[in-house]
Image 1: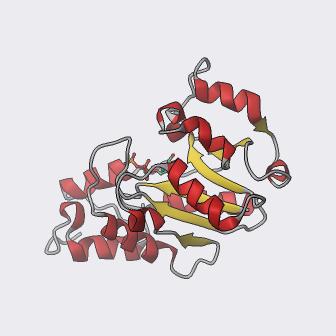
Image 2: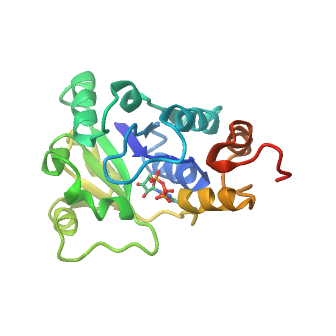
Length: 216
Ligand code: ATP
């Protein structure tokens, strides 16, 4: 199984990292490939550059063998479309290897606006992590896809290379990157919401307006 967890990671925080580890644990310790997007197609610009977000991710996973960083969307350049990324991975990993993308319910709720979204289940499984406070529209395409292709146990992802959806309830941390950026911008400390090494680098680089001289 090749597990891909894409996002803006602007910046990466303990909510992302715990979620990735929980999914890995549910799938027998499989590695999770955290994949920062270069130009996110569905939202405005990022607070930090692609290279800065990648650096923060690398610091965050340092020393954790279950989590690795895949920078292919940065190397490819241009808008980061998941269908393109999965085609590239499929070509590398062969037709039979199960591939899965991991998304939160908030991201999956807009799945039918992703470019070539109908092609995505033909390339990979989708693991949907239920985030409290986010609901799928019961009549929308994402909910319909989940009803049609949903499976109840991770084992079902191993007998086929793609095409199944698994919704998981995991203990999640209520942390968001938007809130972290706002705190830093207001001069409030985000400490303990993200790894100390990440926070140190944010201050060293003055990212999100973290002023190196300020006594956080
Ligand atoms: P923002 O607050 O700026 O929207 P975010 O923290 O939601 O950012 P993204 O990088 O946009 O982070 O999200 C990447 C993926 O991580 C998405 O699938 C999202 O659902 C998931 N995610 C984000 N925060 C958490 C969290 N606290 N727990 C679990 N999953 C999360």
